[in-house]
Every structure is written in structure tokens, then in C-alpha cells.
Amino acid sequence: MNELAVKADILSMTKDELTAFVGTLGFPAFRAKQLFEWMYKGVSIEEMSNLPSAFKEALVQNALYALPVVANKLVSRIDGTVKFLFRLHDGQYVESVVMDYEHGLSICISSQAGCRMGCKFCASTLQGKDRDLLPSELLGQVLVAQREVGKRISSLVMMGIGEPLDNYDNVLRFLHLITSADGLNLGARHISLSTCGVVDKIYALAKENLQITLSISLHAYDDEKRSAIMPVNNKWNIDSLLTACAHYFRVTGRRISFEYTLISGVNDDEEGARKLARLLKSYMKNMPLHVNLIPVNPVEERGFDRSSKERVESFKKTLISEKVNATVRRKLGSDIDASCGQLRHKKRKEEGS
Ligand code: SAH
Image (cartoon, rainbow, N blue to C red; front, side, top):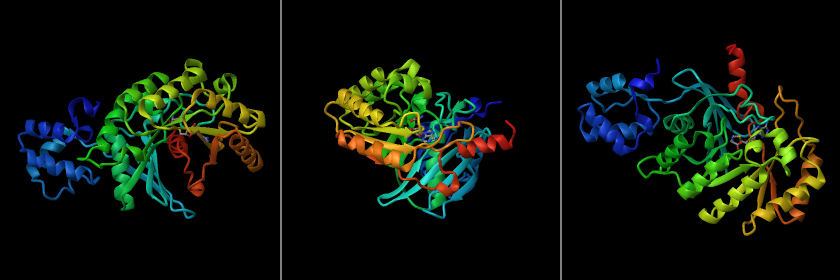
């Protein structure tokens, strides 16, 4: 039976909601405050040392405290990147990665268990989507990782397993929780959300007017090529996607960044780089343009090869010569399978599901 049908998901609650819930259990507001503070340290109910046992007992009976459990933790010897495989309360697995940048620690979290978007080069979507993650499970990845590494995480990217805009309501609640002064108080400007192009939700997000950075996984310079590798393009083509991006920029004033995975012989040709630059300039008229180039990580089942170093460099140069800023993503954690989706996929193969 689904535990959530009978138990309250307390880590998904705001402080006020938690206070009301704790009241229904017959405990005063200051207990809710204590509980809230403990939860944000990522500790278990047993470890909450100043809570009376009757309160803990009531929580165990009535609440689901959905903290992910570390099933595996890999630390890169090259650059200190830490990759977590988390087990969720119902046995699902997701991944998070903590990266050490000059400006502090950054975490990449998953938004769904699996993914249904079907991008042809991606490991996360090989077996479809099992379920959406709860706000508590999004937050829990950050809280547990932060506890494990013993240092404050100061920025967040939603670029792990899943499509965040396909889990819109939970992601939005999570963004409100994590940026709240009561919670981790993470600055919205230190948060990026990456989408393959769920256009109706880009309009919805624009209305929220958050100061987060939106990243678009574009990966192709025309519809034919994009539809061949990203099925989402059949529903929302490049025109509708870039029109939504222009709207988003107009409304929020926040620059959008574009991701472009380079796949040998598929989308990495010279003429393509020029077409890409012109395409972006034609839609994003007043926005300084930036394309993040990512040589594809080959996934065994996918059979795509990464572009050669020379091809990547020349693609980048062409973009820059067209006045579109371009950088090649630095690869962190290459010794620990740090690209998302790969550990979960392996684990599922081991478990025969
Ligand atoms: N669903 C969201 C976020 C998750 S994917 C999105 O599509 O943006 C995060 C980024 O990794 C996306 O840009 C995605 O296209 C890219 N990606 C997926 N598989 C990859 C692979 N094998 N090699 C390189 N990048 C990949």
C-alpha cells in the first residue's frame, strides 16, 4: 500500500503547514519549529535529540519523512566530484552529483525516477518514467548530500534524471521551499532548471517570475534533426520553443542558456554551427547569447559517438565568429560515471527490472 495515502509528507511542507500538522497531532508550535530545523539538517527522526519520545512516536505513526537513503557514493579521484545513488522510500533509485567549483559546491539533482521524454542519446529515458519525485524527495537529495559532504551547497542545477517541467507542480513547490528564508535560503539566481522544451510549462514558469536560470536542451539546428533525436520536438517544434524562450526572457529579464550536445556526424557540421547561430539570433533578439557545448557521453545502448576534439573546437569557433558566445562544458567526475542516468540504469539491470 502507498504509505503516502495514509501518512503526511512532512518534508514537502512549508513551516506554517508543518506547524498546523503538528497541531493536529496535539503538539505545540515550538515542536514544529524544532522538527523543521532538524529536517533541514538531513537527519533521521531518531537523531533529533531534543524531541520528546511521544512526539517522535506520533511522527513515526503519522508522517512519512521521505529522506533519500545513500545506496552508493562515489568520489572522483580526479576532481573530488561526488556522485550519489539514492534509494527512495518505495525502492526507486535516483542520482545526484555534487561538484566543487571555485565559487562553491554545486549539486545536480534528479526530478523524476526515469523519464518519458525519449531523447535518443540519453540513458535516463531508456526504460521510461516510473514516477515523479515529491518536493520532499527533491529537497531531500540536497539535504542528504549536504550532510554527507559536510559543507554548504551554494548552487543547484536541475539537470539530473527526469524532465523537471514534466513534474511541474512538485518542482515549483520545491523551488519555493529551497529558496525560502525558513529553509535553505538558496538564492534563486544560484538555481538552474534545464528542460528539453516543454513549451506550455515554459509559459507557466514565466508567470512565476522567479529569478532562476532556464536552460534549454536544444541539440539541433533544424526541426528534422531535432525531431530525429528528441521526440518532444514533434509536439513542440523549434519555432514554438524559441518563441516561448523569447517570451520568457521578455517577462523575467533572465537570460536563457542553451545546451547543445555534439554528436559525431549528427549535429556537429560547420554549416550547422552557422545555422544554429542565426536561428538563435533571429528569435532572441535582445538577449546576449550563450551556448554550452557538451560532447555527447556515449551510452552503450544508444550507439552515438562524441565529436572529435577538433570538430568541437571548430563548432565553437564558428559560433563565436557569428557573435554567439560558446563554451565547452568541462567534464567532471569522468572516473565515476558522473553523467546522470548511468548508475540508476546499471542498478536496474543488476536487479533485473
Ligand atoms: N530533461 C532535462 C534535464 C535533464 S538532462 C533536459 O532535457 O534538459 C540534462 C542535460 O544532459 C540535457 O541537456 C540533456 O540533453 C543532456 N544529456 C542527456 N544525455 C546525454 C548524453 N548521453 N551526453 C551528453 N549530454 C546528455
